[in-house]
Length: 159
Image (cartoon, rainbow, N blue to C red; front, side, top):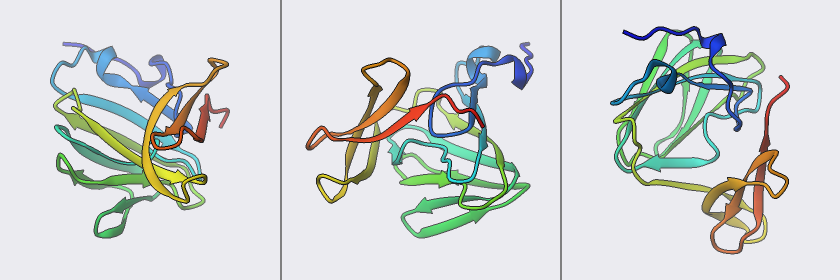
């Protein structure tokens, strides 16, 4: 048995105000478990994406998360749950004014290949993206695979 407090797990850098990877703290081997807090405008992921081998389930405790899906936007409110099968495109974000608190579960733990797209201003369309450390080492950046343009910068959040 393993037990932890969410506050005892270090926050990770990314597009959410708070992301805490609980799986390593609990020594999970078959499931990924992440705690999120999204400030208005934040998202769960770096871009619209899909995992080749992993299904994801999001449980919203507080606020409303709006998921961009292949079938259009889907709002998920308090005490609601949404599931994405392997290969389904999605991106959840906080499009409202209230903070979103949610738990994400992914199985298996390893997500397989992840394909992600974001808007690239240089290419003037959504393109495949990669995530890498910024040159200064203080942030993560998203980069267009086609032209190399930086499309986002994500630092440790202060909110």
